[in-house]
Amino acid sequence: MSTISRRNFLKFAGAGTAGAGLLGTPLARAASQARVVIVGGGVGGATTAKYIKLYAPEIDVTIVEPKREYQRPYGSSEVITGQVTMDDITISYDALKNRHGVKFVHDAVTEIDYDNKRVVTAGGKQVGYDRLVMSPGISFDFDAIEGLTEELAEKKLPHAWDAGDQLLELKAQLAAVPENGTVIVGPPPGPYRCPPGPYERAGLIAQWLLDRGDSSPRVIILDPKNGFTTDYSMLHAWNELYRFNIPEPARSKYTEEELAQLQTHDNPGPIEWIMGEMGGQILKVDAENMTVEAEAGVFEADMINIIPPLKAAQIAIDQDLTDGSGWCPVDQKTFESTRHPNVHVIGDSCIAGAMPKSGYAANSQAKVLAIQLKALLAGNEPVEPMFQNTCYALAGNTDSGMFVADVFRLKDGRIERVDEQRYLPFEATKVQKKLAALYQHNWMTAFTEDCFS
Ligand code: FAD
Image 1 (tube, rainbow, N blue to C red):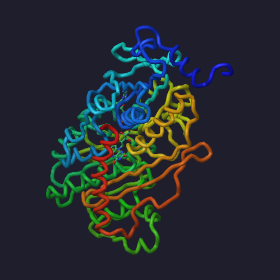
Image 2 (image 1 turned 180 degrees about the horizontal axis):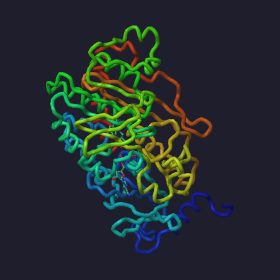
Image 3 (image 1 turned 45 degrees about the vertical axis):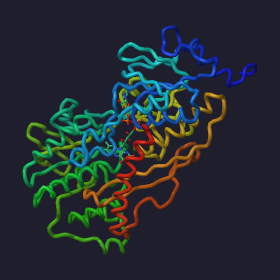
Image 4 (image 1 turned 90 degrees about the vertical axis):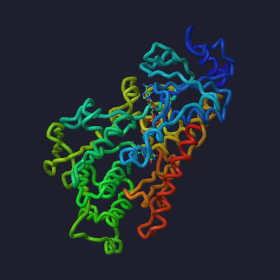
């Protein structure tokens, strides 16, 4: 690269890749108009598109996304328990299209032609790029649990972990649970989307059954893990709200002083958490007889909500962007795939060091990526990034909130968490917990605007 500058080389390389018949052919574009194509119009994809347009309006940005409207998974458990509707979680792409000038191709990507730098869609369209951003979310490993299939998840055993009609199915199933019936919630092993989410859902369901007037409903959490993000706050809140007895192995999460303030209830409430070391690992599900076999034994249930192990979205797997872990390895500064150049993977699909798989994290990565892409496309060096994440959660009672708040920086090439206070303190007052619940609801609105408006 001695006779031409890196900047001109990139323009030249970009211009030379697209063939006739492609959307945005080089001849039709101004020389400076680099093309970024984004696969997936969810949190990561939408935020990247919007922020590239804010930082560098001259860049041509196209989102390829099959759906005409986005249904947000974040905050979607409240559809099951009726606090919000499907309309409330459905988001229009109009602002991205009309206010920010983002182009859309409403189709699913089926192939990435790395050599010619273009994506191919199910409908046969070809869209050329200079830089490709992948934020296609997640897929599910149904084979990991005997008796579970993708077909069963559509109707009888919905996971409802990616929004969609499965939420309505689960809502109907909850309404049909007989008085004082049993619900099983099966959180996945890590890493997975929304670390506090399965436990928040269990709490919401318990609260819903109690509000209905059930005197002794059961919500059994069969968990392959021994801990989860916010467990310190969640178990404490359940102990206060639901006569929940903290399992013996989990008591080590608290100091002696804190343990002295926790209650032991003779007549425990609805929620039981059977953690990994107590035999919570699910081995088999029998949809016909509505039983779940775990290491601890066989459980009968009126409703079963198992969230299977997660992996990167199918398109990322099919197009060779994942490694043996099932997720996409990336350079931690630029999110460029370590497997294919000029392709950046963000959001739930990527391996982002210590960052969790959350909407907040995907949004934070997207904003950094927008800055990095502007630099890279102009032939400049990427900046030293910093990231944030806050996951809010409800204990079940919508007046009792909690959060985990983190800042992340690069350390020896890996995204690491800055060690600071992360949770509400043990001695948080009722008002502070109510405020945390309020923050969650306000965040949901402000965050959605930040990504999509
Ligand atoms: P997504 O938002 O899932 O977007 C992926 C998009 O890619 C989809 O629109 C999909 O249609 C599209 N796509 C897939 N394949 C293709 C293809 N082949 N071609 C084109 N497009 C494709 N996060 C928080 O921060 N806070 C919360 O409180 C929170 N609560 C949650 C509660 C629940 C119950 C759940 C399930 C999740 C929650 N999350 C929360 C997590 C959050 O929703 C996800 O982490 C976030 O949506 C990830 O963004 P993403 O861009 O990676 O994927």
